[in-house]
Amino acid sequence: MTDSKARIAILGASGYTGSELLRLLLRHPRVEIVALTADRKAGQAVADVFPQFAPFKLPNLITIEQVAWKDVDLVFCALPHGTTQLVIKNVFETAPHVKVVDLSADFRLRDDGAYERWYGHPHQALELQQEAVYGVVELYRDDIRKARLVANPGCYTTTAILPVVPLIEAGAIEPEHIVIDAKSGVTGAGRSAKENLLFTEVTDGMHAYGVGGHRHMAELDQEFSKAAGRMIAPSFTPHLVPMSRGIYATIYLKTGAGVGAEGVHRVLADFYHGEPFVHVLPLGQVPQSRFVKGSNMAFIGVIKDRAPDRVIVISTTDNLVKGASGQAVQNMNLVLGYPETTGLEQIALFP
Image (cartoon, rainbow, N blue to C red; front, top):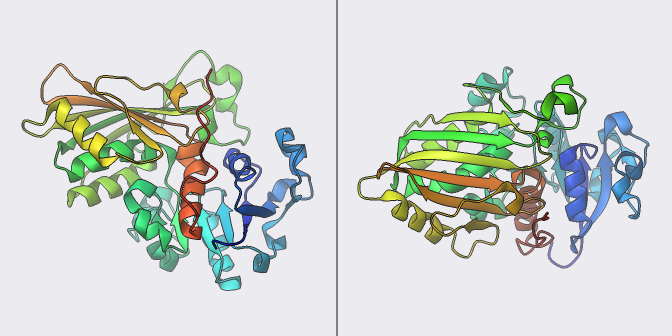
């Protein structure tokens, strides 16, 4: 797929991740958007749902059943968790040539039973679950290039995995002592109307949720355990904060003997040297979520704690870009053989 434009479909185009995919793909020189679905809004123009796209010529919203799969090269699935399994299974049966980047949680877990334990119902496409490649590009780049189905990671998990996995693999930290305190903007909860997401319910305050049992723990367990070669169960608590977008993770770690903050910083700086979308700040510098807003960047800061064997790592991403749609486009670029940064070069919006 290197000489012509790839034909792209977005399933679930009326949500935040769908609109973010549109924002990024409209400036991508190597793709053509041929189908957009949104069952409840089928028949409407995209501009009726997202007026910011009014100047652009885009196909009207349709149902999934109306998609002409023979005219599609790659599909982004931005559908609710639990609904994607049979959809993707049907796509592959109908059009085996199609590549898929799935933004739901349906194919992220490799263990056959893990999905049922965390999501409360059996997986309906286990053979595809085993085929799927977990789409943290910086860790699985070579596998993603060969993949037919990429499971785009969660926003919290991307933000935590990027700094922690290289440290576990390098033996720089003690994996049994990982505490992740993470905050998310309100778009992380999706676009559907919910009372607890009303302006008056969210503004002027913050609160923890999913305490002790958030579903993203399953991804953290999976990737940290793989890196360590044994079962690792980190502490993870997410919080909702009154901002529209962004993930801000403060991660408390215990270092290996003689490693210290300097050693932790050296491991991360070396690991991400030359990476286009992961930036490790100078030792002691604290990142802010505004540094990455609207961009596909992850900023990582390493700060000394009072105790010499403890270190604080702060990682921040935009939950809609590197935490979702931007990483999905990055995965698409690899799958289709395009330069990885294509369509993703935008700098953070500030102020």
